[in-house]
Length: 202
Image (cartoon, rainbow, N blue to C red):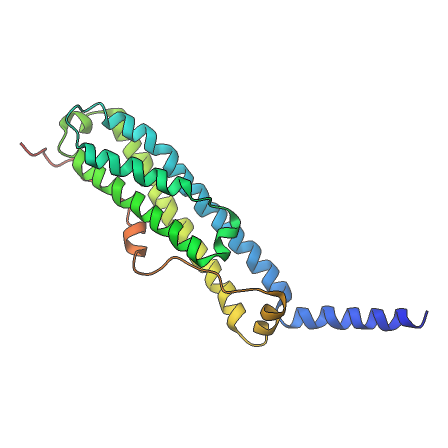
């Protein structure tokens, strides 16, 4: 019977101690990171779902550059092969592979749109035009989602590194999470914009 009051006091002290050392903030920020990451994945999936229709439309051009099409198909396959789970944000190596694969998709799609300028029939194809607009809108959504993720990760990582919350992080195994790197941020976030008003080269 005498042990129970002491047990309650110790539990209360531990709860207050954890709260004062950022435990509740870790819970909140971790959930924000998960939500932001989920939105990033949703937008990348939206883009992946557009690619088969884009490829099918472009294949209608008999002399379209096969190398360009192949690179788009291969980049999508490589990106899709990476299991993009919520746990990916806790694995820097896997996160980097995911980021590189998505960067390759962006580059391949940008190349495809640039090459498509040379084909007047594609430029006049309303279905292709609609897909291009959807793709550009999705690229913009990806940029917004990535920026939200970067912001959420920044707040989380500051808490992990700061005193005294870093002590709580060590005790509860909260590690710094990876974020999108600066070197290919511009490449990935730049929408593949194409000016279809230019005359096709002869």
